Image 1 (tube, rainbow, N blue to C red):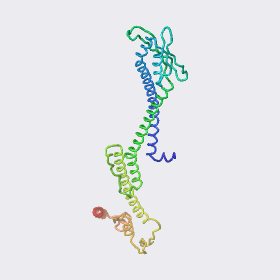
Image 2: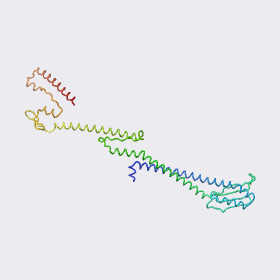
Image 3: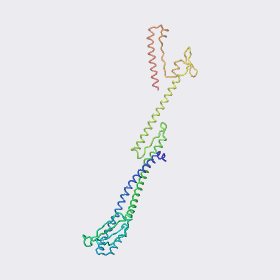
Length: 323
């Protein structure tokens, strides 16, 4: 499985995006969970405070009239709300109502609300104390925060999946197409080139395609030059081999026997099997032997050599012009 991931770009990108999305979603969800929990908890505290504010006037009248039954009704109405755990209503002289303590569900201590006289906002006639049902509040706040965190994680994973699909469609598919075409191209044999990708004409992928095509053209040129050089070397080697080995030559007339069994003059044989061209002259020993070293022949010989050299140059010029 690990080797498969290493050999496929889209799997590596998908794994990287997934891991990154999980890490980010986990960190953000933890922060979001904490903030959501605090916000929900605070909202329940505000609800309890608003509830106390609502029944405060009724509690003030009951305490002002010293009516225990009415005070009990007010306290019982508060306890009907699940977020209120305990209620204590009293004045300086006596306790009008005290609910059974629920230590298992109440934490954080008593919250005290001052009861003023119904007809005088400055006269304090008693206090209404209450505790919150922290277990219930924490449970509900935890449910809301957890739901929000899970929703955030789901959204993050959805974005990650969408990102992986877009990366695969816009990048990985094009790269795989380029790889498949490159596997088919054989430099020096195939003239196929990478196609220009739509939507990637001016980005890094487009530059990669263009540069790769330039490299393929350069490789074809180098290979063709190499093949031409090899052909030239083989031809030169063949010419060199023609004048190698044992060459039969007549010991009297100095003719050479070719591969077909015919005897040829040395000059004819060498000119036929190489690019050498002969010019004819006479060495000093032969000149002395034939003409007795006469000065007039020296001048004649120089003229003959000059004319032969000129003829040879003309012949070589014509041969080069033909090639």
